[in-house]
Image (cartoon, rainbow, N blue to C red; front, side, top):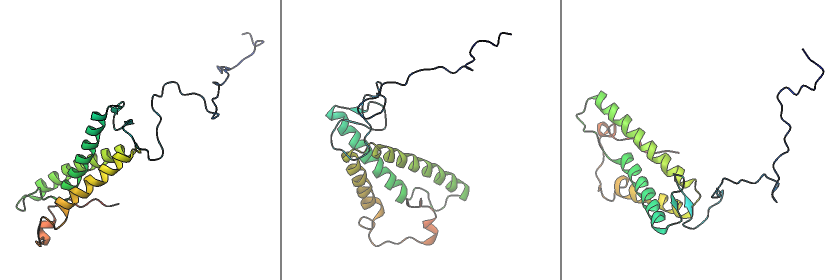
Length: 160
């Protein structure tokens, strides 16, 4: 065995990539900058890569989708979907499935908000407000109150 040559143990000696004016290596593959503060405008990337892009119609569609998802979350939180005569097993399975759907939608709304687009923030809050007004407030239910046995068939409201 020859032990006279320089052993490097597999380490490659490479110079670091050239730094830009911020002292960071350039990012050649990023098409859009990720915002860390709120910004306004239709040039956004929400939920999926490249969506909605720069087209106004697709941005409007993205706003509508987030608005509707927020309303559906409130509907799932406040609407009685299980009949009072249902068995406990059936009621538990349905409640669990509805909870999973509600949480999935809620996380999708949260991910849309992580784009930091001001329009997305406004439509998410508006969707939750409209959804609560229609499904959670007494405005459309009148003065009816729930019996304790009926409360068990509602999904618990979202809490922070």
